Image (cartoon, rainbow, N blue to C red; front, side):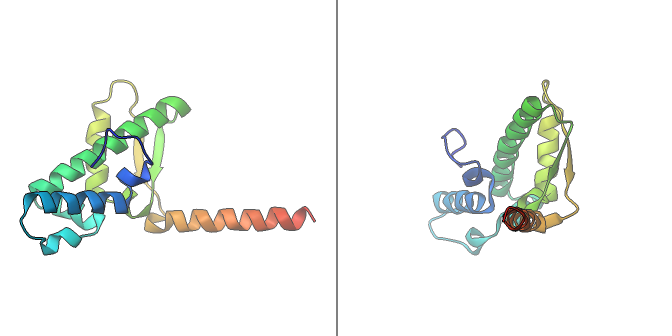
Length: 141
């Protein structure tokens, strides 16, 4: 996981970024590709909870990036609560690991909650934006 390199947040914390980092870890530590190398991000985090050291390492790295981002958002916007959604955001192992890191932060400690929209939060947000766009274009005629 290229945490110290500039780039899109999604490339590190998003499902594809986590899965790519996992595949790279699996290739580096094994002479052949295992079945575990094709896991989804949430499955990797579940594997971390079961004690897999590689998965734990990736979970901690992901939680660290997320905790830094949430701390910065909390400081900039003066928020006390941040609601996470989507498949990655609703991952209990990631939520617990991120909370532990935020609890140690001396500057900003926002509370974290999982959206009631769950894994479909982004979908609902996209639909809402589309409906707003349609409504504004119809009303401006």
